[in-house]
Length: 429
Image (cartoon, rainbow, N blue to C red; front, side, top):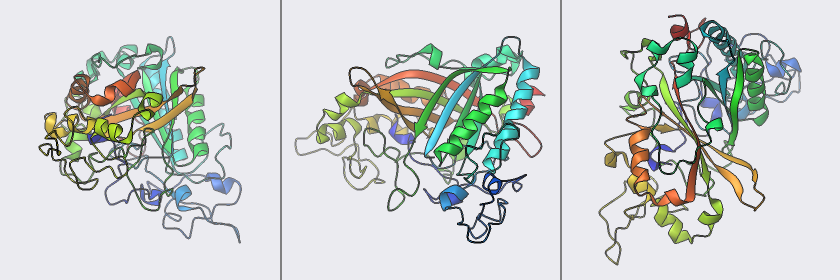
C-alpha cells in the first residue's frame, strides 16, 4: 500500500470532501430524475440544482443536500471515477464474456452500459427495468468506469490491439492469489456517496449484461462519508493510519503524463485512458493491533495521529531520510513503508490511488476478513505499480501485516464523447 499514492484526489479546483463540486454538468439531465419520480426533487436552490436539470420541488419540499446533489460527468476526455474524490461506497465487478460472445456482442454490451451509466450519473432512472431503489436520491457523485482485461482481446479477435502495458503482472512474494477472484474480460468500478445509489448502479449494470457476459467476481468497499469530519482530511485506512499524503494531484504539472496515456500512443484507442491495477489486500488486523503505537508508527514511518513523518513536522512536511534519533538510528526506519515507497527512491514511479476499504465478515476463529480494495491508476503499470511493488517485496516492514488475495490489471480507455460509448474506437476501429 504505497504511501506515495493513497490520498483522496479531487478534480482541479474542487475542495476535498465537497461532493457538490466533484463534477460539472455534462449535457444536462435527460428524462426524469430519480427524485422527480416521487415528485420530491428540489435542488433548484443549490449551486448544482439547475445545472443538472432536477425537476422543481413542490411547495414545502426539502432540497437535496450537498451530498445528494453532487454530480460527476459521464462524457468527457477521461472516464469518470479516476480523478474525483474518494466516495463513501464502492462496488467492483468483473465479467467474462459468455460462450460464443465476441466483438459484436461486446460492442452492444458497452453501448448498453454507457447509456445506463450516463443516465444514472445524471440522477435519472435506468433506461429499462429500473428497480426504484435509488429514486429518492440525487446523483450522489455516482461514477461508473469501464475497463478491459488481457483476456478480452483474445475473446473478441482484437489481439493486435492489445497494448503491451496490459501484459500480466509478475508474481510477488506477498501474493496469495485466488484466481477465481482475479482478472476478467471486463471490469466495472462503481462509486457513490450513497449506498443505495451505488447498489442501484451495480444492479443495473448486472442486468444490462444479459446473456452477453456473466459475473466472474464482485467486491464491495467503503470510505469515510464526505462531511463526517469537521474539516477536509486525508482518509484513514482500517489500520487507523492516515493513508495518502503523497498521492499525485491533478494540479501537478506532470499529473497527466504520469496517469493518462498520451494521445500519441501506439494504440490510439487508449488515448486519454489509464491502466488500473486492482488488488484485494487483506489486513491482518489482529497482528497489527497487537503492536504498540510506537511500533505501528515505526512500520509506517509516520505518526498515527497526524500523519507527520517521524523525522518531524506535519503531514505535508517532506520526509528527512537522513535525520537520526538520540541513539543515532534513522528517525524513519530503513524498512518503513513510507520510506520505501517514496517516488525519489523508485525512479520517479508514481500512481494515483483511489482505494476502498472492505469488510466481508468474521471468520470462524474470530479473524476479520477486512482490508483494502487497492485501485491505482497510471499511464504504464510497468513504470508505476510494478517497480514499487517489487521494492516492497524486498523488505517492507508492512508486508508481514498484509496479504494480497486477488489481483487484476485493466486497460481503461479514454472517456466517451456525446453520442459515443466507452470503447467504441477499439470495438469499431
